[in-house]
Image 1 (tube, helix red, strand yellow):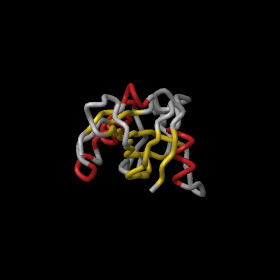
Image 2 (cartoon, one colour):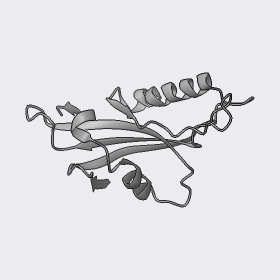
Image 3 (cartoon, helix red, strand yellow):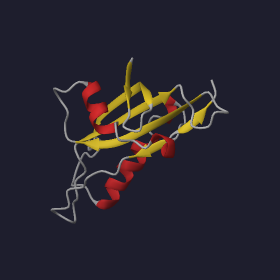
Length: 133
């Protein structure tokens, strides 16, 4: 398992990681703002069936608006399920969060490097959710 410390001081563990091509389902045509919105909505809930319904946080993607009619999201859609043994509220046993973000291709980089680089700045106490085992 991969565990690392966020900038806020929380020690979290990566329970699951998912990589997908952002436009893998776009069989024809060019992306539009509406298509991008659907892709983002789908990315936020796609793992509910396998990871269970969990608090999910979207890191807003950098959109290439050089063609305003066909804005482009970054080519990789990444998801990480993180948990921490330390709850936000001491009445619980731990805290967790699923994070969705879009990034440039990360071939040749380890999952640990990608996750640490992109997620270390998460404001855990503000966005994570407590749970009981």
